Image (cartoon, rainbow, N blue to C red; front, side, top):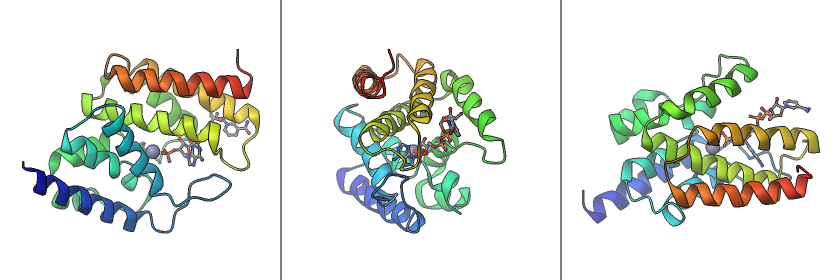
Length: 184
Ligand code: NDP
Ligand code: ZN
């Protein structure tokens, strides 16, 4: 695929994701537009991870659409193809399960994901840990933030060996989070 074709696809994914998330906000004090998050995940993959695989970047922009909006799998398939859909589905939690089960499954399933899905999950957790430190959910106690941080560490353990730069970035974010939240 050439440069202009890839650029066109990235713009299409940005537009699609922005539209799907248009009524959502992140949980931070400022209630930032939700779309900022998938954009940050894609940028981290590009800037820090050095990821150049177009389908991974597209799936990063779309990674929360099925989980958090009314997006149907066939919409993603028809606009972006089977491989992008498959990546998005790999990083989508089954919302019909109780939260504790979803959290447990993320830890259990992380090592068995494809490389592309592991990259997206790594970048997603990096962004969420960074958010938890710099712009945390507004009503979360310190204890809840600590629990979340320690849970991401368990998920990340199953993703190691995928991308050294992203893993090093995660370690730095985790270390500053632990310092801030008083985890020794
Ligand atoms: P949630 O999964 O409900 O919330 C975290 C998710 O919210 C992130 O993974 C991220 O997902 C999204 N998100 C949106 N905005 C932000 C933001 N500003 N910063 C970080 N993440 C954001 O977390 P849980 O309710 O599962 O809580 C985490 C831990 O806390 C669990 O271990 C749970 O057991 C525990 N807990 C503690 C409670 C307490 O009061 N002590 C109560 C409930 C749970 P995405 O990128 O997909 O949008
Ligand atoms: Zn996410």
